[in-house]
Each structure stands twice: as C-alpha cells, then as structure tokens.
Length: 400
Image (cartoon, rainbow, N blue to C red):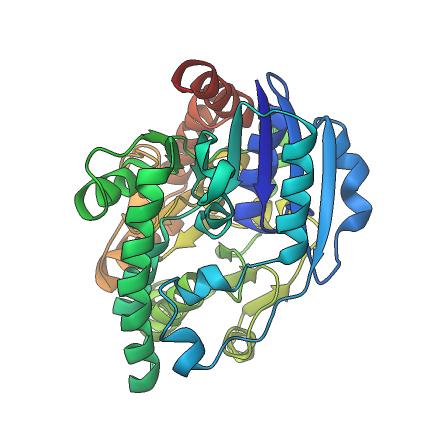
C-alpha cells in the first residue's frame, strides 16, 4: 500500500516515549508498505535528520513550524468549536504541502499521529481518503485523569471544563471520520467505546522496546553497591511530575526508614524546577537529559513507576524489563501491558503498599533475580518492535 504519514513533530532523537513509538512503528511499517512522510519541524529543529527517515520512507518532507501563542479565552477560544489544543497545530504550510502531495499521487491510506493531525483530513476530497489515527494516548481520557490529580487554580479548571466538552465532541467527530484508530492498550479501547463511540474501528497495538539496544547479558548488568531505585521519563510531563510528587511526599521517607542507605536516580530530560529541587535531598540525583539511559538502568536495583495519571502505556516499563531492572508500578502505570504481580513486576496502588513492596524487593535478592529473568523473557516474547510493527503492517493489509 501507498501510505501518507503525517506527524506533528520529527520523532528523533528518541528521547521521549512518544518519539520511540512513532519512530519504530514508522520504520517497521516501511518494511511492508510505501511510506511518504510529512512532519512538522518544531521551531525549525530536526531538519538534519531527514536522511535517517529516507532510509525507510520513499519520500520525506519536513515543514518548519513555530508554535503560536495560545489564543485569548474570549472571543477567539470560547467561540471556536474546535478544542484549543487542536487549533494550536494549524499550519498553512502543512496544509499546502498535503495538497501538493495529494495532487501528485494517489494514496491508499492516510496515517496521522494523534488527534491533532486528524483535522487536516476532515474536509473536501481529503475526507474521502481512508484515515488511520495512531493514538499515543487518548486525549480526553488523559485530560480527565490529569484533572483529577493536578491541583489547578479555579480559573484553569473552568477553562479546562470548556476544553473537555469540545474535546468530547471532537473525539466523536473523529471516530466517525476515521476508518481505524490505533491505541496503546485495551483500557484505551474500553474508554473510547464507552464514552465516544461503541462501534468505532479500533486496533490495539502496544508499545515495544528495541531489544537489540536494551537487552543485556548476565555480565553486562552491574548494580550499584548501595540499594538504588530509578524513575525514568520526561521530567516536564505532568504525569511524571505528579508521580514524583507523590513518591517524595508520601513514600520516600517511610522507605528510607526501612532502607537507610537508599539512593534515588531521577533520569530524564527537561526537569522543571520542582523536579530539580529533589536533588537537594540526601542521596537523590536528578540527571537532566542523558545521552544513554542504559547505564542508569543497570545501576538501579529497581525502577519505580508511581504513576496515577493514565492514558497510553509506559515505555519505561518495557525498557526496564528488557534491560533486566525489576519494576514496581501502580496498576495505572502498567495498564495495557498485561503484566502479573509477583511474576513480571510488582504492583501497588497505595503509598503504604508501594513502600512495602519496594522494601520487600530491595531486601530480597532472590525476588529481584526472579523479576529480572521473568521480565526479560516477557520482553523478548511480547514487546519487540519488529513483532509489533509486523502486527501494524498486517492491520493495514487486512483491515483497510
């Protein structure tokens, strides 16, 4: 098939979970189908990576994009039925480039990344093309979960209510327009069928891991001498910020009372001031952006994933499984991955349970070794990008 792929960013370097998903799925899709890629180059960055994408795409077009200022609530935002988060990604240059490509050749399908690119195919002749929307998260589900956990000011909460109503309508409109929506886990599918459209076309394609990059042999894992836990992810992302706030607010000191020599690694790009401040605590390191996360995973005895805001699945977990760093997570953090407590990972949903299970694993080397080996087997059996990409290619071959 000839597929036009439209991304709101250039997914490289692979320093965000969404970039890992979109890059690897695109590369694998290119093994079986003819891909033309258009991507917005945010603030003109990433243009130098074009040759990389040309290795597996027939044609690559990067369109420079500068994020506009957010519109005033009244009248620009309030009177526009389109959610402001969708309006934000409007680009006349991208619109023109799509017209040029559609005039030059016939495509069998359009593949867009996330809801923000779907609006480019809602009108005119474009609306007749088979549309596939790949969701790194379900926007409405994510926003509602975020709202329930984040302490937004009253004015912000009222503005968000306006956004939720519009997003719900926009989700329903897109569900009717799209031939298929691809989501990261069964919980995303359940939400969409319950709250958006029970009859919409949905395919679950889970997130994966580059096994060649992350898998290690027995001799490659050298744990720190002191008990060490890691939290990995983008440190300007609200769910990660809230997870750390919960950990340091309710779990860190109780855990230290049981593990006095505990060390904590907070690893990820763009830490906000709140996250950077955790480095003032004894034996806590906040790294900021790192070129390679693997040495930090290998030091850690455990990865903690105290996420309470859902949507999508967690690449940090499948990376941990592949590199043999045991994981303790909330069920929300591990949603969609179908992992079993005490077999693949440890699961805990209250602060007390999270502390107890983390301490149990840090004190029990046999348990950690069991989780290491079981997690690696699971990663190899179920989370290879090659395997997951082949599943997506087959979806195109059989459902469109």
